[in-house]
Image 1 (cartoon, rainbow, N blue to C red):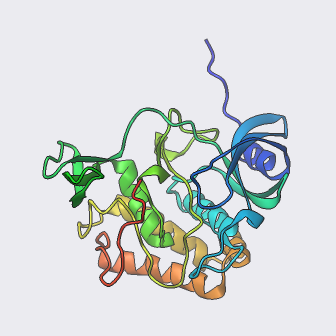
Image 2: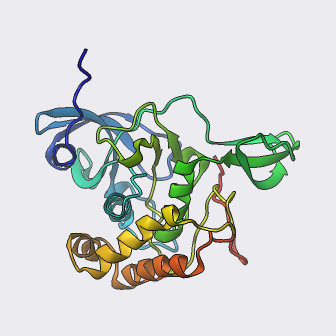
Length: 278
């Protein structure tokens, strides 16, 4: 039996950018207006997430109306540097106007971040922090010691992700419409709070904090710097999506990781994990 052929990346991006979008549900817990629907175009029909710019809630620290562009920038950095942790994402259009349109990722039953009784970290997991749950029981926040999560952690450090909640880590049933490098099926979503020029890294993936980075961890960082310094497609695209200072700081963070060669440590002076955690 022949397995169905995956559409090529260009077809997926064309569908997301120019296809006809029909919304059939809204994600109510989301901070910003977030819809789920079906998009058809370029001979393809697929599920997608749609976040119109007009539905973005104003924030004190991010310029209003820029979150959709940041989500697209995160995808392009992830794709062109080789992290491959962000589903296909474009600036498209829908019933509520222009916004971010992203390939839907069907999640499985695997949990990659969770709570365990305090100190009882399972084999193959990493400890993040200790706290109390809603019933005032002592618990530990942990995440899987997984190579795909290592990649995501380095990616988050480079793009300065201020909102890596547990719910933004997706263990997919399959890799997605476009097959990723290395066969990874771990994806991340909600990258609107990225690329700020100030240090704002907030994540539930602190389990490797301070550990050495190996060459495999740093290869996408090197690829990113080559792409940025080469003045090609990625740099031109990011110049349209981000401010000049934000682009400069992106390059600075990548260079710093290569120089220090260890995972970042939680920042001092502000909250190191997003809230709510899940």
